[in-house]
Length: 138
Image (cartoon, rainbow, N blue to C red; front, side, top):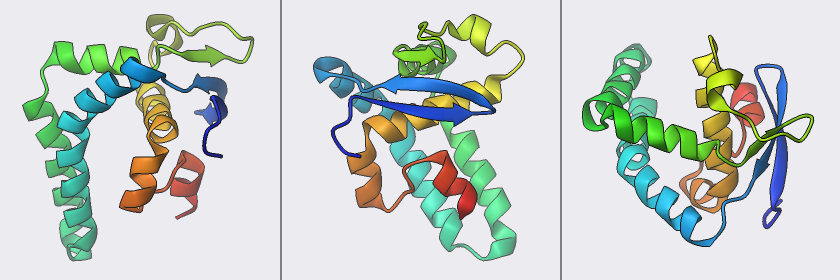
């Protein structure tokens, strides 16, 4: 629901509570995300409209674009910032180094949930699903 300050999600079998970003932090993250995500979304939309046999190559191209245009320090800082206000099921702030050891996919999926929750207005206008559950049903 719009306006909620937190949301509980389950990622890779683990429950997390996401806090909504506030004010300047929300703007700063949105700005950084825009430089990375907007070209990615554009390429994914093109992949979606491509013939089925061309889609895997186009999706791979979109992922390659992110890696080619985002340096390691920027990507790591953004990924850490995205989960900086996420709590585990016992109410403790998660520590990415500990939480995602040997499970970086969960880190990416949780970051995606954080993005969708905090910027749901933007994604709904673009026609994107607002949770991993909805993406899995599609």
